[in-house]
View (cartoon, rainbow, N blue to C red):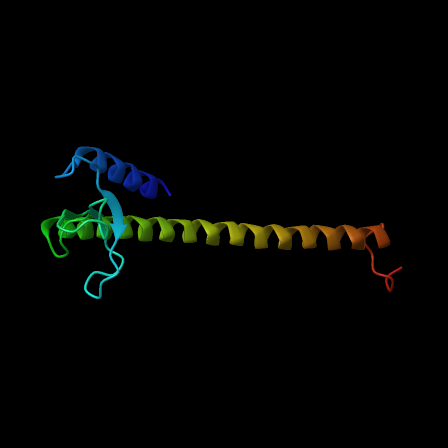
Length: 129
């Protein structure tokens, strides 16, 4: 969610910086072409209204560029950290589960022992009088 809001604010600030031949800000659009489906770009506000304006700029760098390699490296580091955190949390979960089982076994032992002592106040079996 935070990355989406920072991405949206980046797009707004880019639009403020971009002015083109008409002296207006471009519109953020989404490509629907076969080669770039879903890719975002800045385009002229007069697209399909007036002929002759060819203002166009991708919002992200070209795929396969240096920026993408940096992004991949950052994502790999994030994945490594998340895997380590997951392993740590799994270990803690096993410890908590073991403590819960031990607690229940202890509770049942004390409960049954107390129940037996209530029936037999001297701790003797019925057959031994």
